[in-house]
Length: 274
Image 1 (cartoon, rainbow, N blue to C red):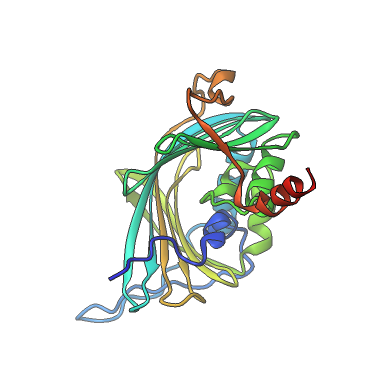
Image 2 (tube, rainbow, N blue to C red):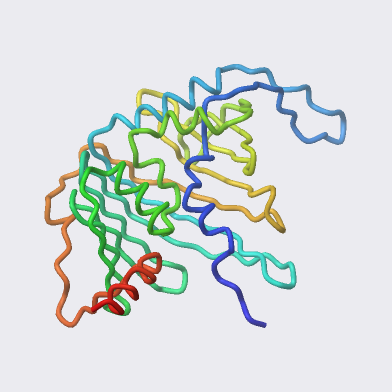
């Protein structure tokens, strides 16, 4: 059987953050599964989910720097209808206004690094010793949106990185519920569940002065097989030691420069005109 690794909705994963969390338009009751004795009563809204969500979004958007580790997984629906799970680990280092480094390793061992230094976006694949680079001055917000929309590249939960995060959340969420107060990884957290036009989501946010996402589950309800994307966050650090060299790219010996796929038609035209 030929296994399909990357889903056709890769661009949806790129904007997963846009639909992870948002200010609510509606608040409804969440019910638990029916027990053998009787069905549990509907949960009361013990906290305002939109307020919890926006505190998290604004906290991240206003943080001058942070680092975090992620373990993500996603379903890919095969031609047979079976869902196969693939995974990645990621380490993100962000330093506003113009420093970003994302190191990723896929479940098959393939690695790549995304860098931004305020001038250039670089994607480096050390396994093949190749890299692609595009000029985009301006800052992290501009670079991330250019990376997703113009270069058509994948960067899961990318909106967590930009200062417009709260506004995007408000715009996209159609309904939001408070599920329960719980613990995740031993940390007290609020469990929220929301809906957008195309995605159902759940997010667990820590209590306290630092409202941080601990876990996210996205269900692509309009896609065939309703595949899911899952992310677990660990080792949040809001005072990491960073240096400019972490965001700049120096090609290693023998590295070959290639074009982003979205740049190939333009590159071919330029070669033809030469």
